Image (tube, rainbow, N blue to C red; front, side):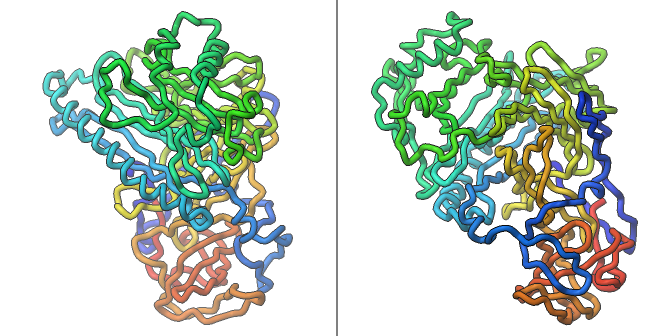
Length: 577
């Protein structure tokens, strides 16, 4: 894992080091919003939702009642997609230590809560995860062997870069009927340029079955003609870029493709790369499929409203106007951000100086012919790893989120409103990573991804008994930046390499049942932190399953739990540096 909370020190040895983000520029435009500078200031919530029963015990500050029954709400929730992520690096063993290969892979899974609601889908994703990971790792192994041979012929002192391989998950639709995703892959393995493209993953949410395109359509006769018409309409300004469309599309099938077919024969078949979105059927054609590499990728959408008889009713979305977020990495050209019917080009580029192409000095963000530049002093701290997210809200707004890994497991974030076809800087922020917990294999980890403008999981860092990340759900706010109505943070993993353990008996409030009561915590009892309001208390599960609420004041070495010095209550408190 490249960036995670993994360095811990005992409070008895060293003071807590506070992590910080790169300094981002203040917001431009008419918003007048100031940049959030510290995580501690971000913990002031104002929402009304709680994960556990409200306590009426001593010291509890009453909040509004929770609206609705949480279990009932959860059962109606759409599947929440997370990913397993793994990084790959291969460095030369000579004195120059050149980076020969780098990359990462994301594999889609369901969160634990969604896995309980959709067990068949969760099982299918888990079963497919190993196959997908093995496939990617075989690519990495092959690429590593090739780049090592290539490196032997290179001048190590003037080595200009190695291979890269990445795979990122983009969720196109996730509801009670369909989970539709693209696996976006990029690869450079020598030659004049790299290659990129999408691999489709589509599931029936209720059964967990993988879907072929023919499963979601009432008929496939005439499908190629519909696609050709949409391609010619969308790319009418440059019709000559295509190869013979009739010939190219004649090889595509809505069903499965035999792995034993002769790809060099005249009758070879290609499976469509497709996804069901809230708007319709999106079809993707990568470089070389319908046109030359320079023409890039092409996409078309057969909208549900335009072709109402084309789709099986069971796979139609309940909300065709739902918002979505699409990860596009560094560039894209397929989003009509201002509703004028034409594609707009959004992208990110590194900024270099003095022909030093190994060390970028900043990041440029562009929309068509407009560019905004950030330096290392006022922008993302690691510009070469910045990624772009196109955000489309249910009320028709178009936004651009730029997120880049920063120092100490934080992320620099920049938010633009692009609804009118211009780059309007809204705000900047800095948040801890999307990291949830380590995976069972010990070499990968689970994390949240962005795909739903109404449910974006962002975290804050806390140094209370141990270092942990607390997550809350955010939505796109009125100005376009993320905001939350939630007060309670969910804690997915506890810091440190040993369980949180009591070294002194003390009283704590048990919040099981309707009426809180004080209980005695015995020496040796262990605690699993589960949630916090970030201000006054943290909830924890004891070894016997009971839930207790621990009231705190201060942070780190100054921390008090239930009015007592935390260092006297718990064994060797550990905080991330």
